[in-house]
Length: 320
Length: 248
Image (cartoon, rainbow over all chains, first blue to last red; front, side, top):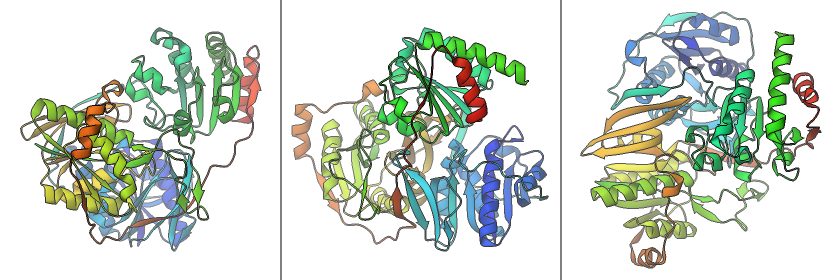
């Protein structure tokens, strides 16, 4: 018996979410009295997962897996799961993990629950808390199958260092024909993605036009943050759809979310509700966002944001 | 090309979410139901295939009779016929099983579903359906072209997008971007009248056990009041974010 966890990497380097899912898997393993086996694909330093609680790492090195393919990855994880007699398989909430999860679920006849935010409240019956209604509620959900798949909501559990060592084993699963092949990838390499960001700076219609996004990007740059926007802004074509956060856009679960010139429609607030600390900057003191925020500044974004950039630069210089 | 669009019947995005029966059931009282937005983008793309490439478009929902107005709306938008699998949608797995049965019976080449429903957000039905029917699968899909049995799809990935080539039969998890918001169609009177005459077939469900069960619901803890910082005192905001919130 074991707890299996799939750890994502990019260009050989583990993502932060990889350490988080291992930390989470370790918590389940402790609850169930077993150990954690991680699966890593083309990752360097596989042994570093030991620090977060993995006892063993099945390390796959295969050039054909350089580009993500949901079917092949699901098959590899399924084979690892069977080999290790996994009772629970833990995944992150990245776009790729959410892509492969349902395929893995069918492959393993394992019930899958996504967007889980806490360690299981009980392992028998196996019950986890997940978000539902786009963060407007939580559902305590029981998985009734023998093998369970848990998709952990990014940034919900945190990293827990346990300082252990992991034994790294080579693993060569048999891979199916994929049916889907990648032709091209278009990805900004110098920008933080909303999914991976610790901080997100988001702009709304209050910014009056796409030409005013310079200060949003500058603020994001100072904070090492991703940029995002409200639905009207993406509908107006001021910013790409990929930046739209909210109920029909992307969910945000960052540590810090700064909303600038966003009034806070219920759909927007739902999408960003999982963020830990929310700051709103808006001229309208009656804007609904002030009810959802932790910190608020009633003021003109065109005056407040440049000040904030300046103060943050000074703060960074001082604390560097 | 035979297209099936999966339609989830969900609370409107502005709905207040409440629960009844000791927090075990969603309270539908006063809630307006709509076509799941992610499904509607897919349905609109399907209309394009119908008009430009002569595809046929059926819509399907797994649910009770109360979901029929939502299916009628899809017919009014332009789908040819509707299927309702007459059973409660219990979990993603059970829904995917029912849909797989419909797909096998109907011999569909292309199935378009939303990448997730905005109520339970499971995000698993399209992928499970693809795995169950042996179809290719692309989710978070923001672009789709079909030429004969070849398809080209664009998938949104974290921080960008990728273009993939694949073949039919294919299951798509669609979202905004598959068509633009401004392409969405509001049914006109003629569409609504025609929709009344279009077939809406009720089929009996397979006997399927769910794999997961929502045992109870809860709402987020109420939030404390916002701490206001004066616009002339941004130093204080930086201080609070550093020393109190500890996020910078």
